Length: 192
Image (cartoon, rainbow, N blue to C red; front, side):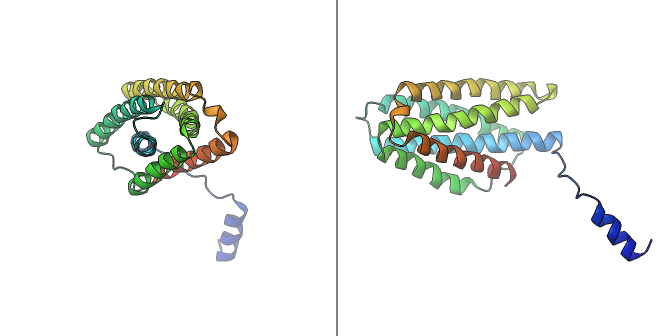
């Protein structure tokens, strides 16, 4: 086949699709992104608590939510080591962005802080549901962890709603922006 005919025939073919991750790569992505997400959640609550302080009506709620996220983070930190998965390269950025998001929403008021929780937990609900569906029978324990933590995150969303998140100024715009940022953070943390 001549070079010209080879070039013409390859131009007619569609580009190869990106390969699906191997089972090992899938597990690595899940552990990496979930560790990053739990780390970011802890930083968000730290930022909110730093601004709102102990006297805020939601102070005890924020402390409780942060403690649950710390427990989730401890699990994924352990899995990083056990499975020899490297953390995301984005971790230093999530350290800053998580705190800034928490502090920024808290500066808008307690209801905005709760709106932040609602937005993130709605994205995490979808994210964890997708992970649970992807994990096979050879990853039963990891799937159970994801399902259990998904239930916790949905409870966090409900706490935020009960605390008046939907009455935050600019609720739709605020939660839409946070959801978009959360989805981008997930995408980046899975891959980098």
